[in-house]
Amino acid sequence: MLFPIFPSGHALRLALLAFGLATGLHVSAATPPAPGATAAVSPTASAACPALLQRSFARLQDNQPQTLCQYSGKVLLVVNTASYCGFTSQFEGLEALNAKYAARGLVVLGFPSSDFKQEDADARKTAEVCFNTYGVKFPMFTDTRVRGSQAHPLFADLARATGSQPSWNFNKYLIGRDGRPLAHFGSMTAPDNRKFVAAVEAALAGR
Image (spheres, rainbow, N blue to C red):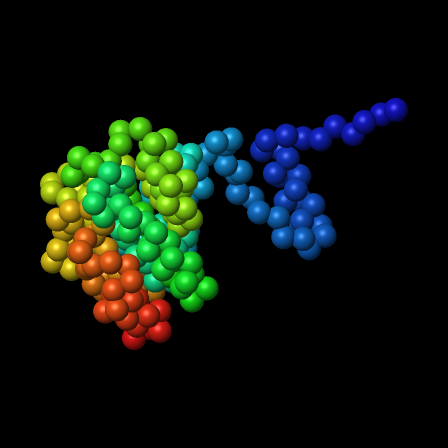
């Protein structure tokens, strides 16, 4: 049996273009990306994602990079967390808040930080505290600097916008659906605090 010989590389693209011209089918002449190449973000996609969210962080459970742009259009609650802090039990309240309002568009984002010397250097132990001890289901990321000159740009921007950088663990930054920081709440503000919950509900309502 005779097998047809197919052209490859540049010859293949020329053949496809010729076929398209003959049949009226649109065939792109663009060169396909090399294996392992990272696709560029289109200007449209970038424009749809607020500048504040155009950052990536490694996911706590598997260290895989995650872009915050996937949360565009959501109301976000950014929290710097720690595993061995007097406020660590707030994980329960934050998870309850996330579960209650997820359907309306709230996403809590947890950023463990050793800035206050109350986070484990072993990410597996941090994950154990978050996911197994406190049943956290909202997104958690790896150890992040949150204050001072070494703060990650996300937290530096949040501090500039609100006038408050984290003074301790479990500071909370509320971000509107448009990616604009709305408010900062300190460690002493519990996730079930009435004024805090009212601010979250107002953000979800678009007010």
